[in-house]
Length: 355
Image 1 (cartoon, rainbow, N blue to C red):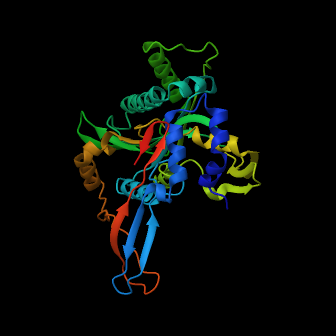
Image 2 (image 1 turned 90 degrees about the horizontal axis):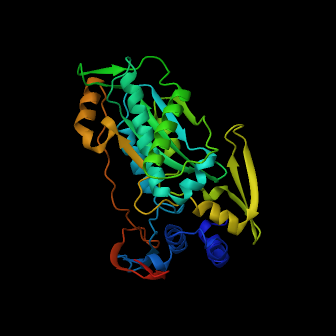
Image 3 (image 1 turned 180 degrees about the vertical axis):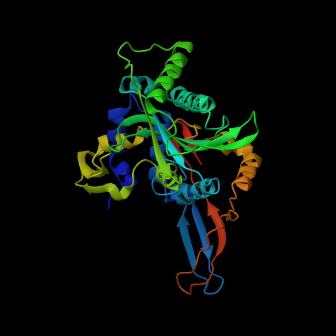
């Protein structure tokens, strides 16, 4: 099986030459990190067995959130924390999608557009909750930004996991939303569209004339909420592609598989390795931008409120298991090895020193 790092090492020069006009700093940094992952460039960990004196070296992972070869533990830890926030309610996944006509604008103003997508989506859901007499006005939600379709094309949209209930601030009690219906998707899309376009005009951006009058917002019942969290966790800290889905490479072209969103059938696509690599790199987020965020009573600053809700709803959760350092066993005698030292190398990339 060919890995993403191997493809980048073989085609990095051609990739930079073909896409240098649109390649940004975060793309180059991500590419270098993926190529350096689990190599001496990321540093070497040296261990020694006190019993048989065997010495063993290991290369560190890059830790970049776009690398498919590392951050497995980070992904699992996030999912575990979210599971400890679950309530015995019906959950819904609301998806807000920006139209095709705005994708070029979003590409050139990524940080602003992604932040505005979050702001407008949260404001829309909050307003709908306040107007709904069957639901409390103070709701919680977890939002995740996705920038890709299943074919890995540029397709910015946001998923929001919303528990079916909220706090009624006026009467100071908890309201549980009955049934399996949350909000109307068309109405959500209409308000979201108005807020996003108003934000563009307010900040001096030009709104295209061909901007569609109808945007897409989907509101889907997902049951207990855990299946939706598992779905979102797939791409949070491990890039947008699973290397197992790269099924063929002949030295020039790459064939990868993907699951069609409509038919749910697996399909394949073949293209040049350079185009495939850019298909991956274009989804690297701007530096410092958080892909996943909690809001309302699920926010980190509302831990006391969440605990009260769990008590009211009779939720009994076990304590979170803190991550422990991985022990290294000796390949000869099987005993625990002792860490000796760590050596770090430096890689210079376009004037940037990576440590």
